[in-house]
Length: 528
Image (cartoon, rainbow, N blue to C red; front, top):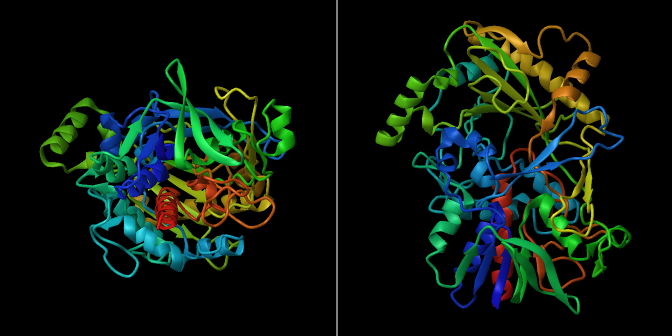
């Protein structure tokens, strides 16, 4: 028996477990399905893409709906390691736009305005450059400027300015528009994940226990109250009980899946899958939000990108520099610069995010040019399309049935068309002309809007920012109240990206950590 059980050791779960255990009068158990974050590839910034190999990611096949039948087959990748997405992502520290949080309030999340969530962003933050009304210092999470800036990134930013984008020194100042360098969750040239920043220091506390490689099968209820969880640790099953609360922080795919396996969700759907209904909550698994991105790749005229480090001698010297001095290209996340831009569909704030990658086809899933190249990623950060997920069966080992409905709203596709065209314009500027030999993808053969749409439908992919599937609100489809409690049940909260009423305008790691901070604060205040 413990006071609190936290299910999921990801970006939010690590924060919740750490903050709750600051109270010496309560006991906390954190359960993570994946292994500990012991892989060196996690902690060296440049090797983050290596985490896509091995057992650190859970690959979930998505089901095509009628709406996205023309989008090529997709795989939803979910992190399965201590630290969750914060251990395997590209380390970009982006909070989203202030208007995102005002929209949350309009959608029923009272108390989640930008003014009200800003203190929780600052509470986490230890920013190595910025300490002002928008930023914090001394918090657990390391946030820094890029340790190493590739010269090609500087030229790309010049190209952005030649194309009419203003330089922005801080995308998290409250104004996103413009181009600039991203701040990153890196401290002392190493990844500052939620596991490293929050959990590692907290594990010295006797009132916090962490169990990895342990799967939660179901939440246990008694008379409308969550009282524990059933787990599988290897071949052995057992039940662990919580005296105060069970907190689900398994992410926007696995949190609603676990709720439904436990009998919480749309009653008719649960019964059809052979699950006994504990509480009819029709919004569980609905409102699946995600960003969709598209890549453009370019052939360079010489060794001007990180592709030179594909050569073993270059790898050796870069690795040696990192080991001896903690500097050089190994300290880079490969994508240190980017921009936010407004398409014709968004006059009030940006709806497109660009990320410039100093390498050929990195992450793009598209054919890459030979030799040396660079890549521009464009993401639609204000999508209107919504999907859903449900059960395949009552077996916890079966993955969820995911229908993302990507590009089901025509405006989402139109926005990405503009994003590619604007990206091509940026890449054709004088500042890059001496580096770029030719555009490899999409290439000059795209002439009409239909050509661009076909390219996007073939190569667009998830940005891996799923959210919204257990959203906060007050309407009939809301799963959580504004304090992240599951509506209609006691002793149960969901604290992760699934709580977002709508996805934020940018990468989701920083907002998810903020949700963890806010959720822990709600719980600690309830104890007094």
